[in-house]
Length: 81
Image (cartoon, rainbow, N blue to C red):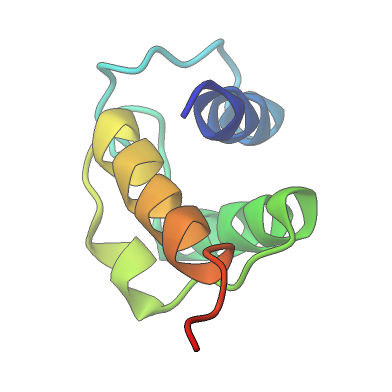
């Protein structure tokens, strides 16, 4: 989880004008739909995963980290028999 959290915080820091905290609201960081699309692309490239439209429903940094972590767990889980 720490790798995902660090990746999300670093990606947010590159878009925001301040160092984001895990407790911050994305709106407070001026993350609108365009910024979220750019952020999602950066997270996808860094973590080598695919994000879906659900990323747009996240309202806090903590929510975004948890959402990305759930996708990482799902997409990098070993395939069943």
